[in-house]
Image (cartoon, rainbow, N blue to C red):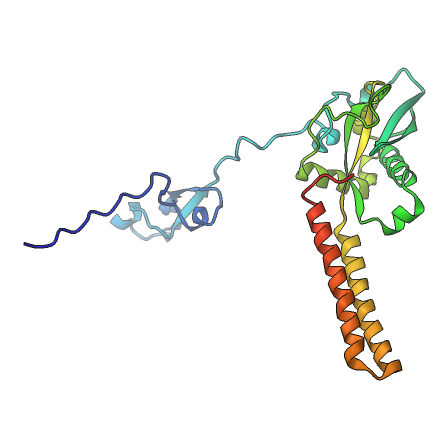
Length: 273
């Protein structure tokens, strides 16, 4: 009697064949339909039976639609994660001449006097100045954080709220990248009032500066620290003629710096204010 072979288990239902190689590497699928082969026949050449057949190498792509999660934004302020305030540029006629906007950075707060004749270019420039002004000189020089985005918060924090209450979801990664791009290219907002209309729509609302770790600052200080340990080891070995001790001390300094680097990496996953 022969030995019965066990039947192989069926494949999971989530395994499916791919339409083509592009879909297999994660790109949106595209339908392949045959081209009109009549346009490819030479003039005067009679039609052949294989002209009407599908030839795999001759096809045109029909692009698949974008996913439903892609949204269109009304203006630049909404694209940066702020609530929508439908005020068009040609309808910008606020009743006030000066608007007091409350600005928060952590538990610190200040006021920004927004003038009616400003546009988004001036407003974004003044926001950067206000953010830098709310940081001390030492923090501006040695801090490893930078401005990521802004979010709307209640401007009234009395009598019990020492820190502004977050009432809306903070901007996601793409919205924060857009806001950083806007700060670098404020000239594209000359004459526009997207941010002006949103930030001055309600006197009971203020803004909170959201920060993130700056890769440029971290890279600069890490490279500078590593280079300084190398310089210290070389100078110490030249002065004392003791190469072993010099590089032992430099290695200890490098190990201490690596601990600081690990600490920075841990802080990126937790809230630290």
